[in-house]
Length: 316
Image 1 (tube, helix red, strand yellow):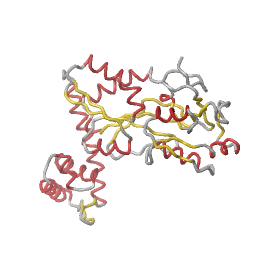
Image 2 (cartoon, one colour):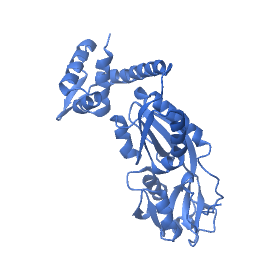
Image 3 (cartoon, helix red, strand yellow):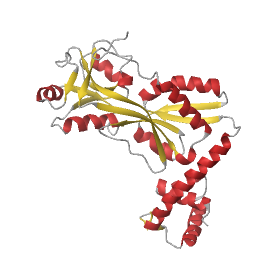
Image 4 (cartoon, one colour):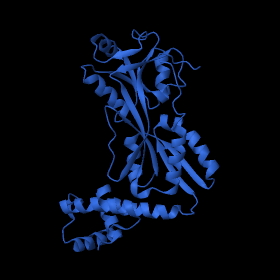
């Protein structure tokens, strides 16, 4: 019979890639983790780790057992959570991270509901991109994420991270009313004339390594157009401020269309570009606060994206 603590040590090494990082996550010394792994190897009858430079990596047997360990740990966490829910109060810290548009649109109502229903819960929020937030989730620095996944670049997550799609929405090309394509309702990504107009347009976009940036590159490069990205701005509303002055175009998800500055038109694309907002958490760390927050966010989703007529960036 394998010890759950030893399996947890193996799973941590598999997730974090080193004994030292696993030890920090488990609040143990590297020596103690090494001792647990040595005992687990004797129990398993197979070598589970092998040297790799100044670190270690899992053998084939180690990867097989680590996969089972992740599932067992998740099942144990689920059992513990079910027991904790019996008469337990939702309280303590809840550390949330998310992309700006999702934080702005989904969290205010959710946080207000949590404050009313669970006054002893103390949520904190930090915004950022998935590329930066996911490592912090895996390292135990955050409990719950709101991240984005675009159709052209589906979100990849580490082993042990659970995803739940909260909302799916269309992505538009935002143009100034003075742009040559502004009189259109749709941009045809297969039409040579439309692509030429986009090639002659400067772009405002999220920084490299983010889903919006990679989506813009992939969408246009696969059609022979190299986008002229001049403005690297993480906030969609800041991008739209440049669009309104006919300085740039941008890719704008539906939930970021309002409040939009005047003189901006939103054009759908054919084929359609889409974005999902997903919640992400560690399966083995789903706590009553995480579940309460997921429930509150789900209640906020119904009113998350207000109706904005196509081509109209003005409020009202």
